Image (cartoon, rainbow, N blue to C red; front, side, top):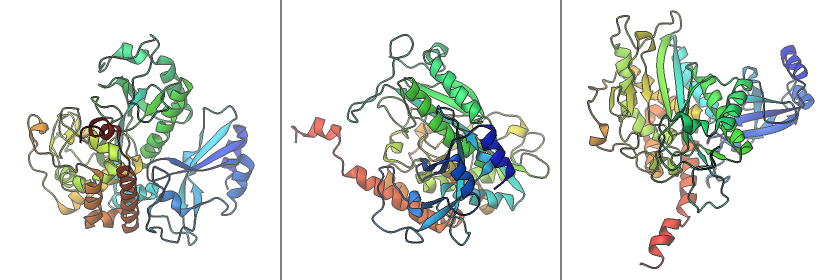
Length: 447
């Protein structure tokens, strides 16, 4: 326990602390404890959770097979004190801290999403490199509903009317929800979330927030916290915010685009470009790795049954892993930039993806390309929608591909791959037992 931690809690008059971990779905799990108890817990190993917190499905159930490494024993929480923040929506001063998890012998819990990302970052660090990322996160605002069978609708704005058409980059359309976005920006300031621009996307009630570039672990923490901020702010204004990949039929899906490059830790030089602006071999190999391995890693970018509804042509979402310059139809876009800003944008991930796992997966695939010196081929011209749909079409296909690819298993961790695949297969099986409204509508009296 540090004096700084004591001082922070006392100076902010903290009464309670949310001690959290991100689970496989990116949901905040943990405990809310009185501040004095939290301080006391730092003197020993009092803060624990069952290991099964990392094998819980999004429905709250568990895979039938036992995939925990220690028969669902306890794991010990170690706060990352750099993640300490205030929680701005409580009336009582409340703190929050994100934890790393360890077993009794002190070894890290390899199935923890945060640890998976740290494992990949360590592979870059030992080469003297540091990845830089900048996520772009889309989400929908929708009218509240307590009937899951009823299609979602755009919310009512300040004008008293819902959006009836698409308002890409519409300023007045964003202004409809100014009080809500004022709260989001205020909450972000309190929680040190470094957001950049806000814009209206193509869907009715669809928005996008861009994050400033930075170190991957910090950005994953920020996205993890930001999703909760948006949902909490929306509830204050009697609106739902959703990060589902495809919440509305006939509307675009929501993505989490990941801009990424790699810099030399000693010199700070962008390793993706020469000084005169030419692509380096390392840059091309990185793209080659993305092209080869992303289809096998799709479970990290499209983790839910709903995720695959987004990946269709002509809705600003990719259907393959072709690459191109300033081309938004491809899976891998290279924006026009100065040499120091040379980067590749991975457009595969949905907004529903766990940010720790999506960033880890993208960086792992790129690193494999560098290690194997994979040629990415030529960038394409024109629409990638005229090319074959080469990404998995549904969750079981992604589970099979993810489980079978050995280089990714080695890089992300055998235990993690086994557990994540089991969790997602359990979710598919739960979904597959549901009879949908479409089936009742078209089959009930016709077959």
